[in-house]
Length: 383
Image: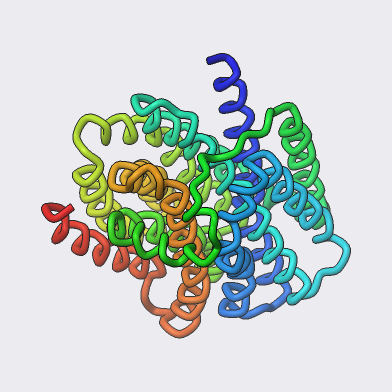
């Protein structure tokens, strides 16, 4: 029991560092590029590098996990992330930073997929929902602190990157204290030829559970990658941008665990439908009050409260719907759909800001939430 607890806290701690680096990079690079005159569309395209890396690596993640175990995969991913973070200050060009983001995407995916699957594997059924909620909570804490590093560019542009790489090294070293384990082996599942067959089987069982991670990926990257650009263009100061992003993250942190526990009692489907509707309402309200810092602060805090746990809720819902032998594949697909949403979020958001300047950026996100809400509501009785 103590071994499981120690392992659990090490894993969620390294996930918090991963969240910190992601939360910092999106608004930080957006602000740097905006200051250098890079268009909002290209700014968004650069942000997609991380998620392209995740998608490219996804079909190849399950095989090394089953062959070498959880620990080597997580350590390799962590090393790739910290090296990439340390290289940012050396050459500030669009495509070099795009390449570094792609490598961070591959490393982060290896780290998070390994940690997430390991936690779901050793967690008892009666604590699985709570543990996944804590996993999401720690990622959210790191993601919340990350944007607060943006004002450090006024001191030195390299300082935030150096700080993130330093924290990554500390977390990475703690991984060596863990004892490696292998997932349950199966002859059919060990064949790479069956990878896409497993994808299809898992999709059949749990496709509806992949929509919340998709929506949250779109929200997270467009909010952290596009909103700083939009905010600067409508006259919001840089330090206020960080505060507004922090409001969203704090709301998500505060209600991550309560919503997870509530979903255990009331059911995942009901909670997902409710938070999607409330997210639509709050983002619509944000579009109305966007000229008011305090009004926007309250709206984004409420949005974080309601929809900040969609990714962890989606994982837990997928676990409810998916047979145990397909659980690693289900975890992988949750990451894939989150990454797909994250991939298209900054590009669509950048195009929206550039070509629809008279319509609030928040209406784009509220429209997405409304569509996902309708889809899940129509299928809530079928799943």
